[in-house]
Length: 168
Image (cartoon, rainbow, N blue to C red; front, top):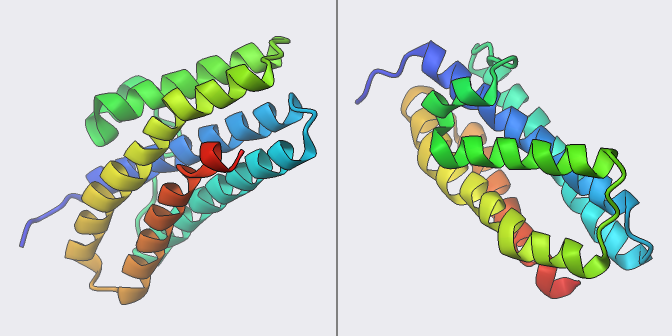
């Protein structure tokens, strides 16, 4: 068994929460730029699920008596979620800033962005971060079947998000 410092767990959860919140904000902002009600609905769905994932991660932290670090900068998150996680944080922020600055992408641009870029990051969050880091790390310390089930659900949700471009 490995000894995992609470500080590291706190950083991983804090940065994971930030990733989920940023993707939620991004999908919400994208939904505001779309006229098609069906596409708007799908984008809002992903936004709500991502926000729910952030809250679930916070609940898991509380259950395990871990205080997540919620004020880390992307640069500080590199230690906890790696280069790709930091790239995702920065890209989400960049896109949100553009959208809030008045950028109105066409539906084709939104779909290309989702398909080419955002789903790769969503896959990273679901496959790499949740499955490989959090799931294994928390499984080592918690022995909580309920925690493992929730993390598996988040991982599975992230896989389902990858099907959104095909649905649209």
